[in-house]
Length: 364
Image (cartoon, rainbow, N blue to C red; front, side, top):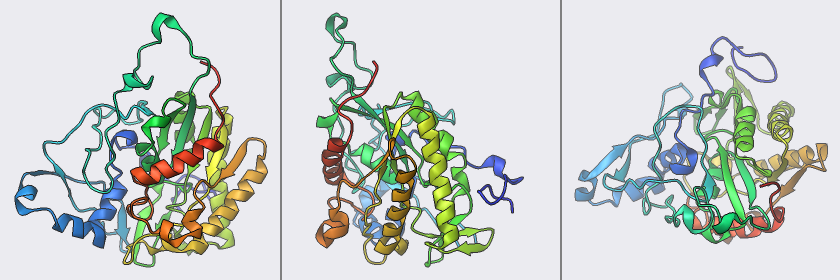
C-alpha cells in the first residue's frame, strides 16, 4: 500500500503529493468550482448563453483537473471562458495574504461579474484599516485589536472568505488557510456513484499547512470548514470504504484530530463549522453531497471531536435553516451551486457567525 494514511506509513510515491501548487486562494476562483460549472447542466446553460462574438473575444483559462473517472482518466475540467480584458489586481483586503508553499507569480483576483461565483470588488485596504493600511495618525493604538480568524478547510471556506461582508472588516480580519479540494483525508480517492473520483493524496500534510498559515497570520482562532469531500465513500488502493462504516469513521476522526491538534498546538482555539445540508441541483455529477444523512453523520463525528477538547474546541451552526427549510437550502441566491456561498449567502453566514466569535483579538 503506497498511500499515506493511518493504516500504514508513507509510500515510495508520496513525495510528489501535497504541495500546494495553486495561486493564493484568496485571489482566485476555486478550480473545483469552475469545473463544476463546466461539467454540470447549470454550467453548460451558462456557457451556451454567451453570444458567439463574446466567446471569440475571451481568453481560455484552464481550470485545474482534479476529478477522474473510475478508470483513472481525467474528465474535467473544460476550459473556462473569462473576459480577456478583465484581470483586476490587488488582494481582497478582508483577507490576510501570506506567501504560499509554491513560489509562483502574484495571482490576480477573481474578475467581478464573472458569473454566479463572482463577488463584488471591495474597497481599497486603506479605507478600513485592512491589509496594507497606514498606521493611525500620531501612532495611536486602537483600544482593541481586530479578531484574526484563520479559515482552514476546503473551497467552501474559501468562498465564505471571498464573500465576507465589507462592513464587518472593522472587527474581523480573515487569514486564508484553505486548500481547494482538501478536507481531512490526505490519502486514497473519494468516489461517487456516478463513477467520478477525486485524488486526496494531493492534500498530504494538510494539518501542518493549516497550522503554518494560521500561525503566520497570528490568528486568534481557527475556523474549520470541511464536509464537501467527506460525504463520499473512500477508495484506498482499490478497496472501497463505505461512508459511515466503522473504518470510515475511524479514518475521519483520525484526520480531523490531526488537523485540530495542529491548530491547538499553534496556540489558538478551534471552532468547527457544522456541515450544512448541501443542496446540489438535480442532475448533479456529485449527488452524495445532497444526501442529508451523510452530512448528519459527519456532524455526529464533529460533536465527538469537541468532547475531546471541550475547553478549546467548539461547534457552531450559524444557518440551521439549510437543513430545516427546503426553500432556504435550495435558494441559489445563497449558494449558487447548492454548496458554495455567493454574496448573499456569505452575508447570511457571517452576520450570524460573528456573534458566535470572541469579541476581539489579543495582542497587537
